[in-house]
Image (tube, rainbow, N blue to C red; front, side, top):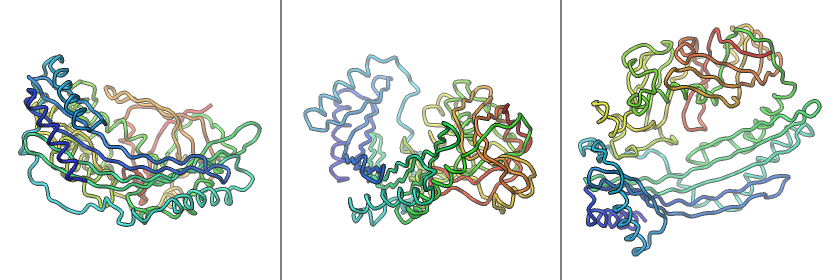
Length: 440
C-alpha cells in the first residue's frame, strides 16, 4: 500500500511542479474505521468505512494554498492538481510561506513507537459486538434500576499515512486505534436526569481496561451525580481529576503557540524564561511515548520530532512554533503542535491528598467554559464531589470557577500519582489552593 501511496503522492507533486508550482508537499491517508453501537441490549449503529484522500500543499509564485481530494483516479487527480495550482495564483502573496529548510528533516531516528496492534487483523465483527454488549451489561448490572438509559460505542481504525515533499522529505506512519465510550442517564429526584459517561482510548486492545471495568465505572460515575446541588460561593482547595486536566490547561497551551504570539493574542508573549506557574508544574512534550496517541517521528510539516520540556518547574522554556511562524517571529522552529503532553506524577493518591485538605471539591467534569488567550482570563462550569477530611459529603453541580490563568496555575500545590492513560495526554490529578468556587 505504501508503494501505491508513494506513486500517487509523487505523481501529484510532479503534476504541480510541471504546472508551475515552486514547491509542493503531499499527504496521503488511507483509513479503515468500524463502529458498533448498542442501546437497550441490541445494535443501534453498525458502520464501516474505508477512505483514502490526498491533502496537497502548494507554493506558487510566492503564494500558498492547501487543498484536498478523495478522487485519486489519474485523470481526476491531474485536473485537481492543475486547477489547484491555477487557483493558488489568485491568492495574495505571502513570502513567509515555504517548505521547511531540509535541515529540520535531519536527525530522525527510526524506532518502533508501538502504534500498531499486531492483533488488529484478528479483531472480528463478533468481537466488536461482544465488547459493546459487555460494556452495556456491566453498566446496567452496576446501576440496576437507577439507570434510565445506557448507550455504548466501540470503534476501531487502521491508518496508513505518507507525507512526501518536493524538497526531499519522505515519511510513513501506520497506526491502529481502539475506543470504547458509554453515555449513561440516571433517574434523580423529580425530573432531574443527570448524564454521565466513561471512555477509554488506546492504540492496542491490551492497553485498554476490560469492558467490564469500563462499564462499571461508567455507572459509578453517573450514580455519583445523584442528589447534586450548589453550595454557597466559597474559597476552597480543589482537586481536578486526571481525565479533566486537559480542560483547564487548554488556556495555557493556547497561549504557548507561535501563532498566538505572532498575532499578539498570547498573554505569554514576553514570558519565555520566566516563571508562569507553581514550581510543581513541569510539562513535557514527548513524541516517543510507546503507544502514545500523539507519538510520531516527525511533525505535520515533516520536521524531526524531539522531546521537549515546555515548562520546567513553573518556568516557561519553549513555545510551539511552526516553520511558518518561526519565519514571521525570526526564531527557531520547534513544532507546529504538541505530540504527547505529560505532567510527571507525584507520590500520593487522590484519597490520601483529600484527607489532608479539609473541606474541598473534587472536580470530575466541566460544563461549557471560555478563555481569552490574550488576557489569560478564563471561566468554566464544574461538577463533582464536595469532601471534608477525605470523606465525600455530597455531589455538587452547576457551579463555576473563573479567574486569570497565571494566578490559577500559581496556586498549584500538589500533583497526584495517577496519570490518565486512556486519552490523548497523560496528566495526573492536580490540587489547587484558594480557588473561588461560585455557587448560590
